Length: 477
Length: 112
Image (cartoon, rainbow over all chains, first blue to last red; front, side, top):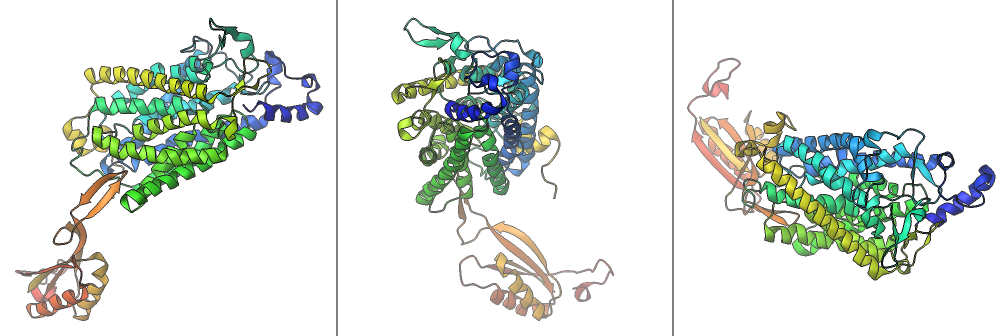
C-alpha cells in the first residue's frame, strides 16, 4: 500500500549510499542484507509510537473510564487498567509475541520465539515495503502496547462489580486464547520480501499464501486493529457484562459519572495517543504514515461533532460526555481504515459512526437491558464494525482510497480493487472475530464464575470496590 | 433567644450575609444541603440515560440571635434572598434554650 512512495524515496537515497541495492529490491534478503535495510527515522517513529500507545491505556483509558464510574469505584478502575497493562506486558514477551507473530498455522503462531528467544538487538521485523525493516525489538514493543490496551478496554463493560483476582486470571487466559490467535490471523504474514515464495494455487486456482494468518491470507484489511482490538474487546465486554450480571440497583439508582473532567482528559489523551496507534501501524515513517495521522485527526473531529449534533437535535443540549464519546467512536471507526481512507472519506466515516453508536448506547442498551457500564460494546464493538465494513468502501481507489498491494508477486504491486468482494471479506473477518472472541470469552467467564466467582458480595459492591477490593479510596478529602 | 434556619438559593448567600451583618448579627453557620419543595428537579442526560434529580442543591443558613432581633433577622433574610421565583427557599424560627461560647464558658446572649 505504501510501496510506491517508499521505493521512490529509497531509490534516491540508494544511488549514493548503497549501490549494491540500486538495481532494485532484493528478494528474500539474507540477515546481513536486512540489517542494512533498517532506517533510523522509522525506528525512532516506532519507538515514539509505542510510548504513545502505552499512554492510551495509562493514564488515558484509565481516566476516561474512571471518570465515568461513581466515586466509590474510581480507584478500582484505575487499578484494574494499570494491572491489566502490566500483566499483559509480561504475558506478551513471555508467550504472546511468539503465538501472534511467528510462523505456525493459519490460526495461531508457533513457539519459536518463546520468552523472546532468538530476538536480539540485531534481528529485524518486516514492514509493508519491500526491503524496509525495523529492529525486531521495536516491533515487539509496539505490538506489546496493543496487547496491553485491548484487554484493558474490556474492563469497562463490567465496571463497578467485578472481583480483582478473577479479572486478572481472565486477562491472562483471554490474551492467550483470543487475542494472540486473532492478532495472528489478521496481522501475521511472511513479509513483502518473502511472501511471494510461499504462495501456491488452491483448488479454485486462487493464489494463497502458505505463511500468513488466516484472515490476512483472505485479504481482510485492518490497518491498525479495528477487528483485533476493538471488535475483539467489545464483544468480550458484552459477553462479560451479561455473564457477570447487572449492578445492584441497575435501572433504579442513579449512577451518574463522578468526574467528567477526568473523562475529558482521558479522551483527549486517547486522541493524542491514537496517532501512535494508527500512524504507527504503518511500521514506517512515510507519506502513508502521515495519511493515517491526518485521517485519525479529522475522522475523530467529525465524530465528535456529529454526536454533539445528535444530542442537540434529540435533547436540545449537547453534552461533553457525548462529544468525547463521539470522539472515541470516531477513533475506533477510523482505526482499520486509517491508512486506506482519504481525509474526506475519513470525515464521512466519522460523521456516520456517532449516530450509530448513539443508538446502541441509548436505545438498544435500554431496550435489551444489559448493563454494559461504560459502553464497551456500544462504542468499541459497534464502532469497530462500522469501521471494518467502512474500510472496504473508503479504501477504494475510485474514492481516493489507497487500495491494496498485492504481495503475492515480487516486488509488490498495486492490486485490482473490488469493493464488493472486499466488503464480503471484511464482513467475514468481523463475524469470525465476533464468534471466536464471543465464544471463548463466554467459556472463560463461566469457568471463573463457577469456580472462584466473579462478583464481590452485595455488601462489598455497595461499599464500593475501592475499599472492598483494594483497601483504599481514590479521594481523601 | 431565637434560632433562625433559612434554606436559600446558593447565589444569595452574600446578600443574606451582608443584610444580617448590617443588623449586627456577628456569626452564622452555612451548610450545603439538598432537598425539594415546590421547585421541580433537574434532568441530567448521560449517553442517552436520563436521570431526574428531585433533590435540588441549596444552602442552609443558621443564625442564633436575641429574641428582640428575630423579627428583623427574618425580614432581612426574606428580602435579601428573594428573587420572586419558585425555589427561593424557606425560613424557620425556633426557640433557643441555651448558648455557650466554648473558649470562655460565657453563656446565652453574651455568647452569641
